Image (tube, rainbow, N blue to C red; front, top):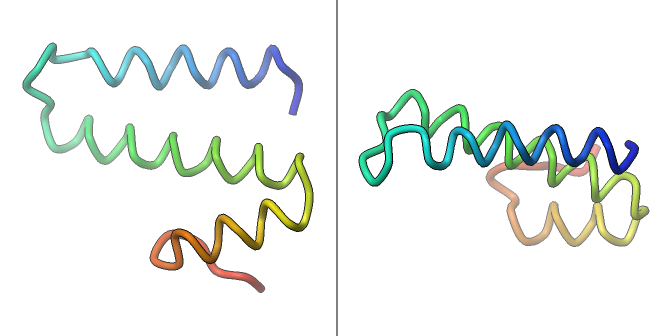
Length: 66
C-alpha cells in the first residue's frame, strides 16, 4: 500500500468521522469501523508478520490468524 493510498483511505475515514457532526448514524458508524479495521489490517500486513500477529492478539474479535 502506497502512502497515497493510505492518505486516500484516511480522507474517507475522516469524512465519515465528521459526517453527522457529533451525532453519528449507526450505518455511518459501521462503515467507519469497517474502514478503520481494513486500513489497520493493510498497514499491519505492510509492516510484517509481527504487527499482524499483534493486531490479531489485540483484536481477536475483528481478526484471526489463518
